[in-house]
Amino acid sequence: AQKVTQAQTEISVVEKEDVTLDCVYETRDTTYYLFWYKQPPSGELVFLIRRNSFDEQNEISGRYSWNFQKSTSSFNFTITASQVVDSAVYFCALRAIIQGAQKLVFGQGTRLTINP
Amino acid sequence: DVKVTQSSRYLVKRTGEKVFLECVQDMDHENMFWYRQDPGLGLRLIYFSYDVKMKEKGDIPEGYSVSREKKERFSLILESASTNQTSMYLCASRPTGSTSNQPQHFGDGTRLSIL
Image (cartoon, rainbow over all chains, first blue to last red; front, side):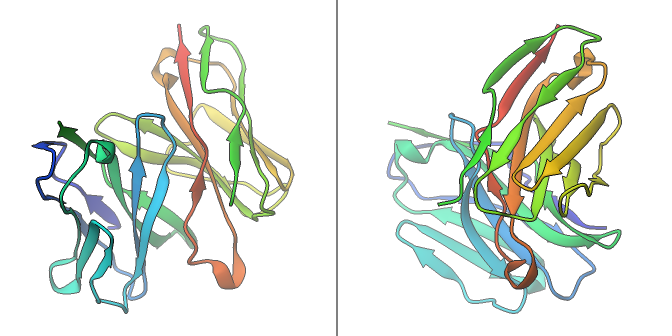
């Protein structure tokens, strides 16, 4: 099965705390891509990062970092020194081949609230 | 920057009406997608299209149809709207070919209420 699980439905932290959003995936493909999207209250999904299955290097972009571990099929997202503007719903997604077509399979989303 | 534009942010329709949701992208992308987003379920793919006049069913196509007469425009049609189609609808586009690992770019979404 091609599946993405974000076990944390909602997370609430105080500003400046670090927070990690978990993402676990299942796939039969040997080549695949993983994505994180942010959906602020305005509604649009904003692309954050893409990672292919051959590149297990962790990535850091400012206060954002991603930890990709094939051994545990996880692609976790950490926000360091969180800010109120980080409040949003975050989606992890897997690009997979399903019935011969490339499709994005999304997790259920994690609603992150950063309190001042 | 890629721009995906959905014609309405909010829409209220009545049960049994035929509803059209329009999506336009300005980057000449071959692939376009329609999703619906419901709490606790994430995004689910309704239909997608690889090119003009082409369409493929996604995971939940029942009650919907689509039209892709021009490359830049992908329309989602609710043939006879029902209350269980009240949802947030998101359109996305992506190039194909050598850039197939590119992310999908999303519109702002249409929040549709069926009364």
